[in-house]
Image (cartoon, rainbow, N blue to C red; front, side, top):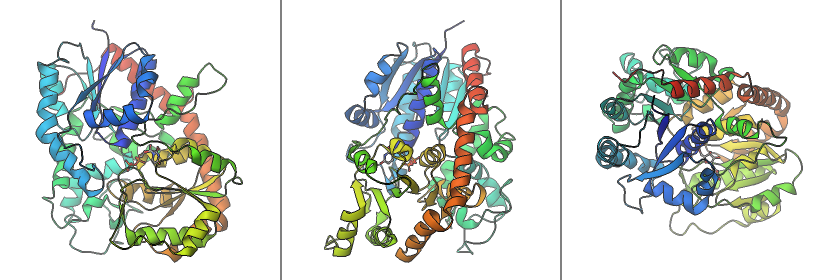
Length: 477
Ligand code: UDP
C-alpha cells in the first residue's frame, strides 16, 4: 500500500492559510507526509513575516510548493476586490493545478489524498482524474456554510433575490435557524437583487460540488455547533469537526510536556509585538481589543465613528489599523485634539498584532471584531466576550450566533455610530459584564475539553488521521 501523502491546497487568504497550516502541522505530527500548496504571493509574505520555513523543517515529510494566483503583485487582494481572486484562480490557477497534478511535478509524487478549500469546485474533477480521494476543508464557520448550502432553498422560498424587503424579516427556510435568523443575518452576498451575481453563482457551484467529496473538515466543535453539524450531515455525512484548530494544535504540541508551546504565527503582515508590553502595563480585563481582520475595509466616516466611540467610552483600547484598511479622502487627515489626547492617555495602535497572544493576555476584556471565523474561535478559546461588526460573507451569520445563540457578546451589525459604540462598549464591559463573562468562560472550557484527550474534536482528528492512513475513502463520483 502507498504511504499516505496529503496535498493541502488553501484559498490564498490569511484566514484559510492560517487554518490550513495548523491542519498541516497536526497531520505532520501524526507522521503523514504533507505537501502544502501556496500561491507565490502568499508564500513570499509568509517567508517575509514568519518562521514557517524553520518551524516546518522539523517535519521531514513536509514541503511547500507554490502556484500562481493569476493576479498582478500590486493587486490589494482585500475588501470588495477580493472577488478578483476567484476570477483569476478560475482562469489561471485551475488549469495550472490540473496540469501540475496530472502530468507536472506533483503527478509522480505519490499524493494519496487532496485536502482543498471548499470553494475550489474544480478539485473534485482533478481528484477523480488522478484517482485519489478529496476532502474539502471549509475554513469559514459551519453556521455560515450551512446558510450557503441553503442558497437554493432561499431562492425557492423567494428570499433571494432580495428586493429591498425588510431586513428584519425572519428567514424560515434554513433548517436549524428558524427561530432567530433575520434577512440581515444572511451572508452579505444575499443582499442582492440579482441571483446571477458572480458570488451567488460561485456559491451555487460550491453547493453542487460539496456533496461529491469523500469528507469535510470543519473548524468547530460539537458543543458549539452540534445542531448545525447535525443539519449539515444530511448533505455531507462524513464530517470531521476538529476545531478550534489553534487550541487543538497547542494541545497536541504540548502533549507530554508541562508547558504547551506558544502559538506559531502564520501572519502575512509583520507583527508589532510592542503592544504586548503595553498590555502588561494595563489592569486585568480593562482593555478592548479592536481588529477587523485581514480583508475588511471601512470608510473614513466609519473609522471616525469607531474612534470617537472608543475614546468617549473612557476605556483603554488596543486597535489594529491594518495598512490600507481605511479609505482615506483628500484633506481628511487632521486629527481632532480630543481623539489624539484620549488615544495618548488610554490607547495603543499597531498595524498588525500577534492576535492569539493578545487575546490570551489577562488585560484584554473584550474583542471588537468583524466576526471572521478565525477571530471568533480565537476569542472563544480565550473566553473573551465580543462586540461584533461584521463586514462580509459568513460574518453576518457568525455575529448573529455570537449575540443570539451563544450569548457571548453583542451584535452591532449595520450600525456605526459613536453613541451606539460607546454604549455597547459600556454594556459589555460594565452593565452585562458578569453575564457575558460567565458564558464566555463556560464556552472556553468546553472548547478546551473538545481538543483534549477523549474530547469530540480530538476523536474526529484521530478518525481523520486513521482514514487518511488506511485510505478508507472511495474516489469522487
Ligand atoms: N490576525 C492577526 N493579527 C491581527 C489581525 C488578525 O494575527 O492584527 C489574524 C487573526 O488571528 C486570524 C486572522 O488574522 O487568525 C484573520 O482571520 P479571520 O477569519 O478572523 O478574518 P479574515 O481576515 O479572513 O476576514
